[in-house]
Image (cartoon, rainbow, N blue to C red):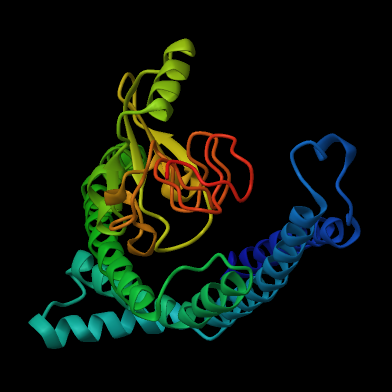
Length: 329
């Protein structure tokens, strides 16, 4: 109890400070309504206005969500939510397999699962609003309700498995660590962090999104050339199919030592750079004829829109012919 009030005070002081910083940034979104001179070459007024409205909406959502989260956590502390969940987990263990309090790891895992389910249920309305209202309003959301539900279930299952294993290992290290348990616990968490950083992109992330090697082409050559110039040990370049989830673009790299990999969001790339197999179904060019890399409706070999090449009919313009001329019969 001696540490209870200092912890509560620290939580709210931290929140108030972050609230102040968020409000300052919000004032920037509200007052900056024209493109700064330094950015006029890369941004127009319309883009700035869209970005400003989006950031204001996100800021409003963030302010409401953060306030709710801090009030909720404070009530959990004052009303004894944590001890209640711990006792609930103990009761479940006793009924399920007669595991008493001496089975600390088992009860801790059940406690973790109870808190994860509670957190998911409480946070679900906020996720729905953020995805299907805020993101949808600004044209970024690409998820369907079915995709969203499947994604949330999959995320809960993966989190439950990973966190249960990590928690079990950490408690075991503490139990058998003796007087220097904190050193062993630190080493354990360091190893877990390194392992997860290594396996997550290759084995966990693909459970949620499709990863494909970037095909040969100018973009791949340019990235490899830049990596070589910077002495960046690039091994592989992936494209992640994020377009089914969001219209946002991003890119990142991961890996250790001389085994670095780059991941590009497919929304970051121009559609003409991607083969049909990597495009969303509604953007594939199957059945549409492509000439010299041109898409339907595009100019071919310098021709103008609506022109026909080789075998043009009356009224069309071919190879610089005048309007109304008849070429090749």
